[in-house]
Image (spheres, rainbow, N blue to C red):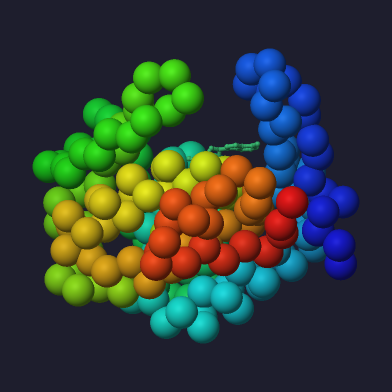
Length: 170
Ligand code: AMP
């Protein structure tokens, strides 16, 4: 099955000049979503993680089913102020300004082999920040996993040894 037929380009969203990869048609097609999760699960298994860390909010669509499929802990990384217990926070640069993400301080067992999951790899800034959170929480990132890699935006170089894997590359 060619999953790219379920990814819709939306020009100028959320602002002029961005071509947004809308994956809601894939989520809405039961076979396509299952094929995507099957493919991601195969990659994830080969990395032998102890935990899945997924990034709010679109990363949850993939991280949660993967954690269930692989029978691994699901660890959410969320926007500031959303996680109730004590947290680590990482700030990262956006095109204009900064944003931040948090993880619970006790989210990971010491040395846990951690796989970071999100929907789209663009510049890699978000996943790099999550790599910092995993390190501060005591884990080791064994890779990063995305449905889609936008290869022209250079995220792969930015992630270094947090090697990115993706089902679809544009
Ligand atoms: P980045 O930090 O630049 O790698 O951006 C990654 C985050 O932004 C991911 O959580 C994506 O969901 C989102 N994102 C960035 N660019 C796009 C795009 N063209 N289409 C869909 N999502 C995007």
